Image (cartoon, rainbow, N blue to C red; front, side, top):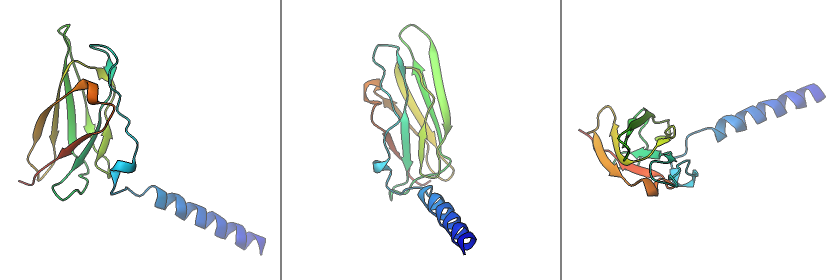
Length: 129
């Protein structure tokens, strides 16, 4: 009997872990992984959240952050959003920032992002083509 109970507990534990990894439709509860730079040309990180016009997350949206620094250097970080429409880009040196987002079936979007606001997530809404 104890073997059956142990097996049942393992199955329940596995199932609960799988449920907890399901993407959340409300990404506001997910803490920001963004980091605003503390100094000019300092290191920062963007947490970008991409949605459609109805508020649904867009998976596999390509996100690129370009940074033109005051010392003449150029840095960039890029990647694709997860099932929740979220990506925390790799940290880079922050100067003047331009965020480019595109996804299949949606119009691409390009926007200027203030470096001092990167402690909060950057929300992007894409419109269907």
